[in-house]
Length: 96
Image (cartoon, helix red, strand yellow):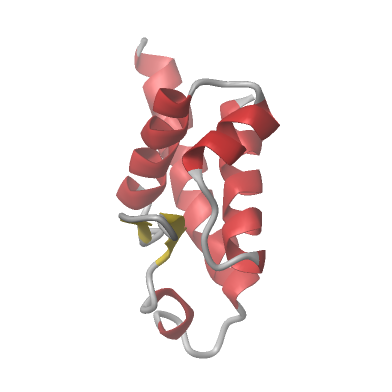
């Protein structure tokens, strides 16, 4: 399910600084393009996911993410953003 994959991606990004799209695609058995669509969805939900170019590049959380809600842990911040994303996905599924 897409929502489970999005949550898993956030947890992975919280625990690791940078991860490659290919690695995520293999882990979730989807295409690299699907991972980039997921990253786009996370950004639209307010989770600042960025991509880094070059040999050490990949996907990571923006440096601003931990400071966005200073009273909350990073996991709690992700949960708040995912709640917003879940609502958006449910609305889209109702209109389709």
